[in-house]
Image: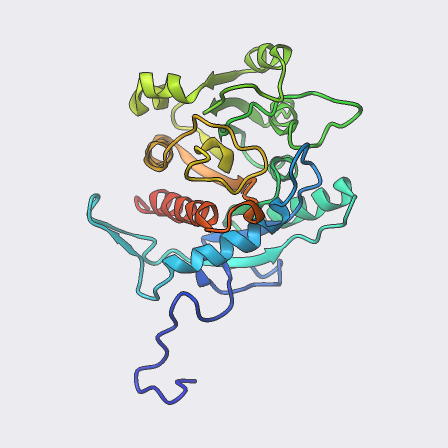
Amino acid sequence: MAHGYESGRLNLPFVGISTFAKSPYQPDWSAIDADVAVLGAPFDAGTQWRAGARFGPRGIREASTLFSFGHAGAYDHEDDVTYLDGVRIVDIGDADIIHTDTKGSHAGIEAGVRAILKAGALPVVLGGDHSINIPCIDAFSEQEPIHIVQIDAHLDFVDERHGVRNGHGNPMRRAAEKPWVTGLSQFGIRNVSSTAKEGYDAAREMGSDILSVRQIRALGVEAVLERVPAGKRYYLTIDIDGFDPSIAPGTGTPSHGGFQYYEVLELVAGLAKRGQIVGIDLVEVAPPYDPTEITSILAAQLLLNTLGRIFAPR
């Protein structure tokens, strides 16, 4: 319907339903036909301090509408590339979450990622706390091996604490145990962590390369990328607290001394050229702690620019 306008609708960012980047909504997980499928995983029962990341998918989706002005792609004058032109993105909604039931909630998330992979699309999962990475990685069990690249303040390599094995302090340990995970690059790790020294020792023994923000700045982006195995299939897991809380305050466990936007974008852009990014999750955005919404905007901007870099060469 043109609603009386001769040229159709203007459809400004604040108009309409907040799917990711205002992309088509596909509730039927058996009928995904796209290059990218976005899944919400609004689970935050894995948190050890401040909850709120259950509202992350909703916040990121709403923020993403800012970048949806309706014209094809997004022109970047620095790169002289129009990104996302012709890239087909669908939003498949959220995995169902069962309160207090980690196992059941994680199973729903895994089913969503498996449906995306079966359709041959790139899964982009919006958390939720970092425990949602566990079912995401589980969903890759039938795929070719993956190397994990993590952007995070925290190592998330706790084996078990009081019987808890699938909280948001455990995901990288659970990933390292998987036979289809060939190694981990853990970037941005800093300050006092939820992981004790034994966890760091175990991570390195299990194939992790761990770099802090300061170490990455000293090395430079190119030297850091050289440390990531070339030509591999990469799974990218981004904890928003990898960024400095001055630009990403809306998260449960902020950690000062974090990345700035372009540092992460340049790492991700280099990664997209070095191998194939085959899965993405972005976690720990907790909108209740950020009335300005800049954390959600950062998440949406980074994801859209990451997708641009992945698909530009194709």
